[in-house]
Length: 119
Image (cartoon, rainbow, N blue to C red):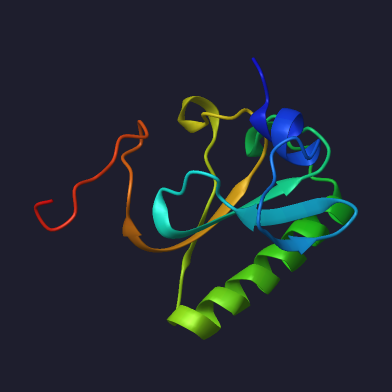
């Protein structure tokens, strides 16, 4: 299966609005957001999923720093947010990632648009 994050984002073939970046981690605005604010946090090396992550303490620490940084920005602007990760069949991209999201849901799990206010 193709890995969108490795093939497009990390390779820089697809430009993204970067929120946070280190040598190990990249946080950026989702290219097709499911929420009003939808930020993706990924490792720059390929890891299939949270369930296959070998719990590398250094990378875990980098993830927590990134999540903390991004959530502080969102909390300051909007008062709060959610942090989530998909695993297994719930992953459309088989690359470990965390989401920081806020606001109304814009798309269903299958990617279809959600009509807002009867529109």
